[in-house]
Image (cartoon, rainbow, N blue to C red; front, side):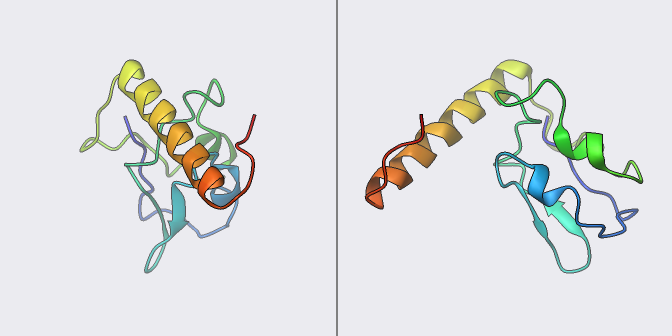
Length: 96
């Protein structure tokens, strides 16, 4: 289940830095969530951090991207592996 940001977003800028997967970015008018990167914080936190900090509660589950906890865990693992590969390619040591 990826999350989405609705048009009720007030562009307060608090959600973007909280996302451990860098899935949140500024869209044309409001922030948006990349469903390919959103794991609802599975693998990082018990609850989605963007939902926790949003002052207007505009971050529901995206009905177009319903995923099980297992699928979210697999996505988390894939993102972590991809991130380690990028670190190695740049000459940096992989994150522990």
